[in-house]
Image 1 (tube, rainbow, N blue to C red):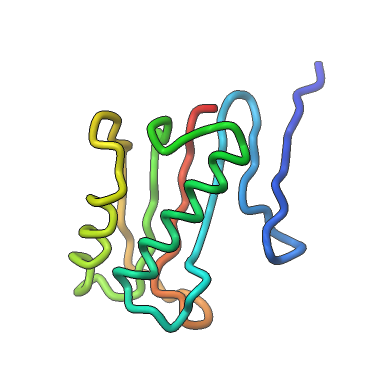
Image 2: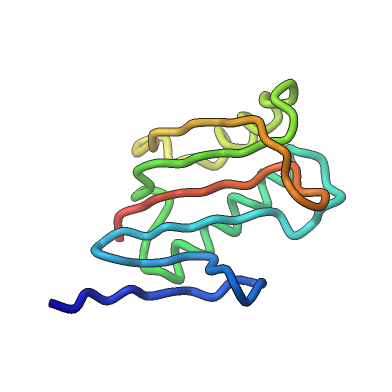
Length: 116
């Protein structure tokens, strides 16, 4: 039995911005504007997640799980404000937030798993 895996190329040739397989979409995003503050980077990252999900045949209302990585847990409130403005309140996903070191000037990276 052959199961199709559909990959959606990202800006780096060795990484996909989304992958669809077996009725699920896996997507990751960061903000294009690396000089923006955490709140704005989070808004831009969530907008990229919206685009990635749409391209893969899904929507934020179908997100099952989100993992948010931020560089400064002391500023988590900024990320939460952007998240709360964006999230589908009728269909909120499970979410975790983890403090990490990210590359370049990224302040936030978001990974989601959604149903197609």
